Image (cartoon, rainbow, N blue to C red):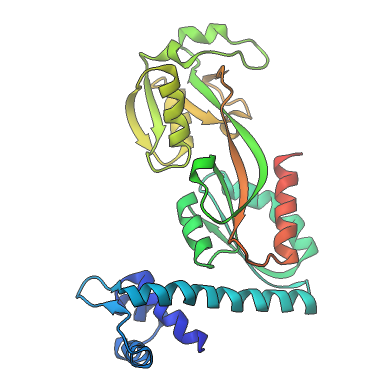
Length: 299
């Protein structure tokens, strides 16, 4: 089967619109429509329910798309395996990492990777966890590096890299700061600041369900000043004496000023993982990048 045709149909499904799909494929809309009509004639049924604004796959379309993705993945894996057999020093590697601290990880790991695989072209992508998972499931991202808890994992493969503790962080001027030792972190029940406002990560973030569970276990709902998509924003708001927050260890490891950090009695953690599509082939270059990332997180 013509894999180029498969890519065309998958793009129509991804965009939900044939005009937008044609633009992304650098084709004219009539040319792409002819490809679709030719395939539908061959199959004897329509693959999409057409409308001006939304193209939805029919039942037959869903079957085609599911198997088309498998065929495209098989082709990609075949090329990767043969490339590894011929030369492990060339190829392409697409990598995803989360906004903010992800670029720090990539910048720390890439030089060592480049020394060993100078001819492998790496495509870095700063993406949310959910977007990484979406692209991995479609075979459009080779590896995703992300932080999440168990309930956010999909059916793809996850390689543990490290665990990271979540801390209660309050303004340095808060009266409870006097309970913190000069070195290390004392434990403090979060109910001690139940009357303080909090800035939290947005509801769809992978840390939010963990954070909500911490409050539920403590028996109260926090007063939420606002929600954000950036942990650095939470840190800045705490430093400005506006709120309290819950932050992963990464954001407090350099002892930023103006805050006081406490461990929670339950010592909540989430996972740092590398993820790739279940059943897909990992090249030698991809495996090496993951190993370097493990060394970065576990020095």
